[in-house]
Length: 345
Image 1 (tube, rainbow, N blue to C red):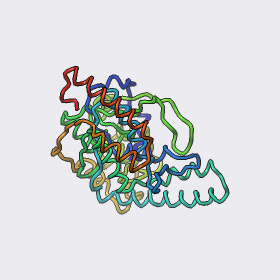
Image 2: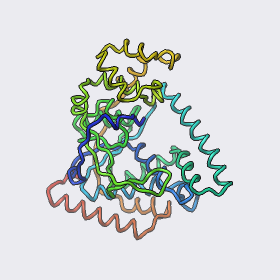
Image 3: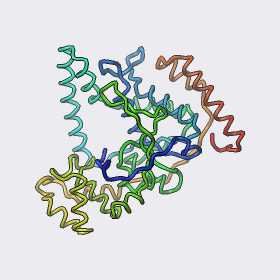
Image 4: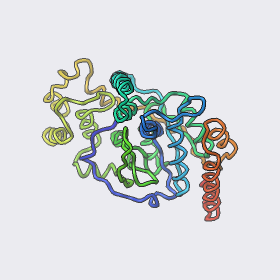
């Protein structure tokens, strides 16, 4: 969703070493889309193998995941399931954005405008089913568990943290908070920097730990009020929110009306902005999103043969680079075993 909560939440900068030995539930689709939009050639096109299959997401996935594993982090990847029906409008909006970007990209190509090509190409990113399956194969070969969410992946990661099966959820979006995720980690990048989408520029970033109880205490809201604030600002289920209502204005409305949500939505003239969508439907979708407790988390040894086949033979990764990474990971596994963490892998 990409909730615009940046200016409202309080964050604590942490180091990757603070997460060593922790189980972290990764919002897989969120991470893969990051790689698809940022790992591209100078003109903005995605990277591919000799058969023309996209590899940008696999390059990012293997590089970051293996680096985090070397640091002793226990990752579990959570994939999206069936989205809520009211998310269809979001798809329509995103499709329109991608269509517009495709047209602008075509114009940029005709004009030889590399800068614009790079910018608009990133906006056309699409993660196909085959690409997701390739990512799952790499994750499994790395010995990491995968959890299939019945619906939204971020809601499932939140459930796993609430269950105590994961320490925190890993995502760039703040959406996990409205699903009740106790702890969220953003900017989990081993490089300490993040590439800006559509450019070759980088910005320095440090991992951030966000505590839901601390956020609610700081804002003096309960979770239901936070959900209402999200709806006012805009979610995947009502993209754009209510025109003219930003985070600060929304927060002010909640301070004035407390939990009288009917009064809040009446004041912002919800029906005028969304004549075919009741705010209660959005609220209930978030509150009652399907999640599952039927999952098994098991970390296994790396399947070296399978990993080499997938990356080197199938997708043209450099053999020496992959072998070097595998050797480092095997050393990490051995070190963890020697320290008595036999259940680590």
